[in-house]
Image (cartoon, rainbow, N blue to C red):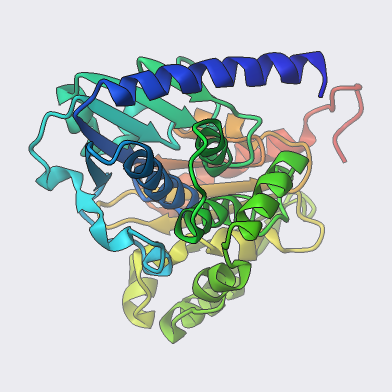
Length: 346
């Protein structure tokens, strides 16, 4: 471990201590992750609930969904998922609000209203943030997943890592590293994952539920999206989209679209992938992925979103054609930009 790593983990350890003090002094605690929750958001939130209940069994803890939608079907197998409550239906004013896997409060949708009523707040996240919020915050963009940080919190608190806790945390890490295929799959992620498997988490159970249990309706939608894939900028950019009409025709659900960006990303020779889907509120949700060192978060940010260098997203007004017209020129500029050493990125 180099000096910078030692300093980072020293600061993280100090923040964990202050988080423990906040939890200790709070009687009522709410937990909420970001809108349209993925495996990292849900796994981390459920794990934090288990950690608090294990260390402080006298606390009143509620785990909230930012949106009015149900838990995405792929993640309903996670221990504790059936106990999640919609934030819009929670009228309490908790002593402490725990915000997970998000860099800004607005990403909590209805959960932001609960945050406004809370006495204190803590944040655990791994997204780049211009101004981290919360009374205590651990924001580490170098971490592969928020689940990595939550796992390290459990270790710092000397919590007994049960198979249920381990499963939630492993799902968070597996999904946010793309089954350890993305650039963020580093040694820290592998070390934590190994510990979680030793504690009883089943990688095969996660794979079965998240990657091997697609409904036929989804597979029909996937075939539509695959048939629409086009490339741009001499094959360096690949893109596709799904409309509400596609979902209605195939019977696929909106939350089943999350993995379609990886289908677009798999095109040989592409360096950047874009997938767009229409949303029920008349907007377009965009997902961006990069295979190399290109920073797609800069494009997402220019379109009103954000994220990581290799994985980012945004939501835009207009229709599919409008958003393509806005996004594709920005992506073309990205792949044509000179690399740090003065060469054109290859």
